[in-house]
Structure formats: C-alpha cells, structure tokens
Image (tube, rainbow, N blue to C red):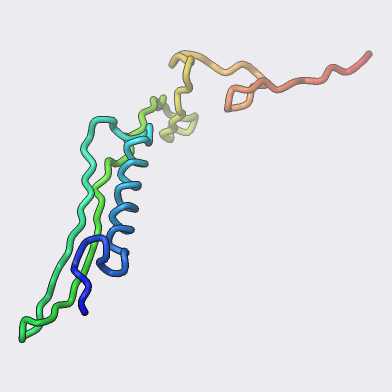
Length: 121
C-alpha cells in the first residue's frame, strides 16, 4: 500500500517544517527595525524529482531558501584633521557636538565628566 504524495507527508513532514522555519525567518526579518520596512522578502520551497531509468521511482530533494532584506547601512559623521606630526586622524562627531567644539579639561573621550575630589584644607 502506498502513501499518497502530499507536501504535508513529504520527508516525514520535514518539507512543511522547513517551509514554516523559512516563513518564520522572513517574518523576523520584517520585524527587524534595522531593515527596510517595504522591501520584499521571498520564501521558496523547491522540490526536485530525479526519476530512475525505468521511470517507476524517483529520488526527491526538498530545499527551502529565503531572500531577506539586509540591514540598512548605519551613518555617522567624522571630523578629519592632522595631528602635530602631520599624520591624518579622525574622530566621530557625537550627537549634539559641533565641529568647532573642544572638550573641556578633565572630560573623558566619551563625554562623561571626571569627578575631581577636592582636598580638604
């Protein structure tokens, strides 16, 4: 007795399982705020049948593929200058800074203020 060929029964249910996994991957990519919202995602289920010479049997391969949207590029601004020796240097311009600003004394490079303890007289 043969079992009718259906996508649900193919490879012991493995074909449907892989299809569901590929769909989940596409949905997660859609929900990722780092990707473009309106770009198309594609889920493909490919079934390949290679028959034998007598045409009474075939080897079946099931494959899924997902074409996702890549993360959007990140943008930032840098200030480019030369140091005292003439070598090129760069620094990232942080939010709220202007190109002409100079860090205050005793400030860390990340903008946090260093607390200076006062000596008691």
